[in-house]
Amino acid sequence: MALNQEDITRIARLARLELLPEEESRMMNQINDFFEIVEQISAVDTSNIVPLAHPVELLTHIQLRLREDIVSEADNREANQRSAPAVENGLFLVPRVVE
Image (cartoon, rainbow, N blue to C red; front, top):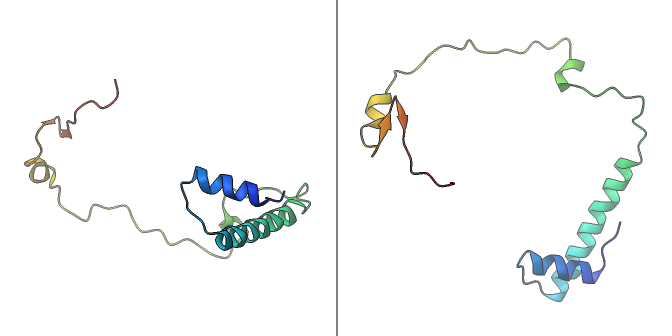
């Protein structure tokens, strides 16, 4: 898929960008270069490749060092909500935006 000058002009107009002619030309070349890379990647046969749930699955010799999930700060909910215009059951009340 390659874009032409008309495509770039239309995209720039839709994005509300004012591009000079040399900028449009440069943008067209850069976007078409990107599309060439995508086509190269898409051409790779991945039919025998099992998708990974996580990239660390391949690195079995690495053990993730996860910290313990412990409370490290005091509960300041009441102090933080003192300046709120409306609070109920420990939650901030806000005006309805969508009806």
